[in-house]
Every structure is written in structure tokens, then in C-alpha cells.
Length: 97
Image 1: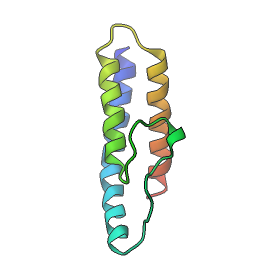
Image 2: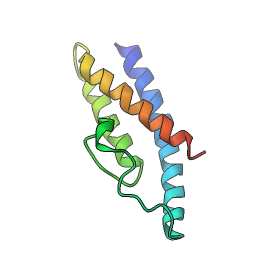
Image 3: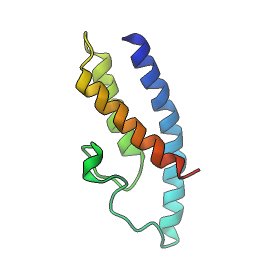
Image 4: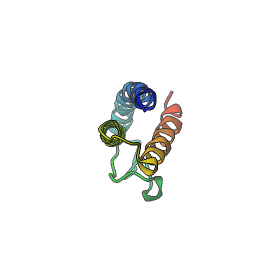
């Protein structure tokens, strides 16, 4: 269990740094009149929030990882959702490099 949470936290650190960089790029694009969209992910992506920047999505996943870390036994459904959300974030953030 601890190794799973540790790996999730390591992924969150990477995602957070990438999210800050990508959000900065999005801010720049928006100032240039580009990047006109309402949300980064559609409703089918599994995220509860809708945002134009990456950081809120990373914070949502971080909250769920914290919930997992406080459980005595792993909630498999929540773990699966966390992994899927992280995959979505990694894929979209990769397009900003």
C-alpha cells in the first residue's frame, strides 16, 4: 500500500511541475488572443471539476491520493479513477512540451 501511495505522490510531483509550466504557456497564449476553450477535459474524462488550467485538475487528483493514503485498505475503484485521471493529465501535458 505504501509503495502505491509513494508512486502516486511521485507522479503528482511531476504532474504539478508540468502543470505550472503548461498553465504559464496557456496564460501567454490567452494574452495573444489564442487558446479559446472552456475546459481542458470533457465531462467524460472523470474529473469532477471543469477548468481552463491544469493546476485545479492536479489538485483534485492530489486530494484523492490523500484520501487513499488515509484508508486502511485500498479503495480499488478510487485507485483506478486516480490512475486514469493521471493518465489523462500526462497525455495532455505531453502535448505542451
